[in-house]
Structures are given as structure tokens and as C-alpha cells.
Length: 115
Image: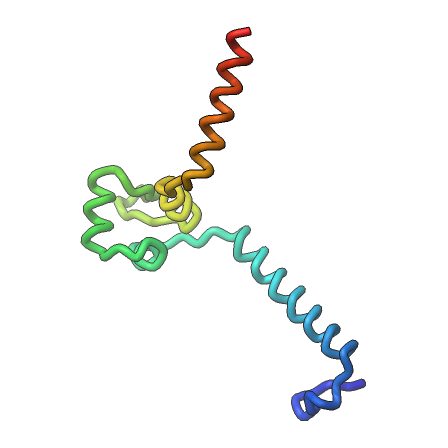
């Protein structure tokens, strides 16, 4: 069956719908994978978008040496999307369950060392 923009939804079979969904999902997955592999580099605009911080806060964090950036030979700076995402994720808080699992792992390692 040829499906175009004038095809009525009621005229489609379940098999037709499954084909459409699979095509849409594979297109989405390919786009998502390329976005994950690419690193976007830019100025303060990118840093503002990724972090949600104001430009003034970004200036302060950069000056304090807390914000990862790329220094250019001419004195300019650029930000890497991946570096900023890793920096943000480094402040991720563990859940109580994750803390408990980590503690149990450390206890087990300690017991194994003492034997």
C-alpha cells in the first residue's frame, strides 16, 4: 500500500502502522546516536544553554578555575558540550540505596584484604 499525506488512518492495517513506527524509531535512533558522538564547541552561549547559569556566574566560575574550558592561543575561550556535561554530572548526588551498596562493597573488600 502506498502511504502518503492523504492516506486516512482508518485505512491502515496494523502491519502498516508497525512499519511506520519502526521507520520512525530507527530514524530517531540514528539521529540520537550522531548527537551523542558529536561534541559541540562554542562560546558562552553554549555554556549558558547547557548549565542554565547566567553569563556573570559563568565568568566567576571560570575565573575561580571551577569551570572546564578550552583556552585559545589568542586569549579567547571556548566551551565543550561534553566537558560541561561531565562537569555537571560530577556534582550528581547518590541515592541512599547507591550509598548503601557502595558501603557494602567496601566492607566486602576490607574483609577480603584482612584474610
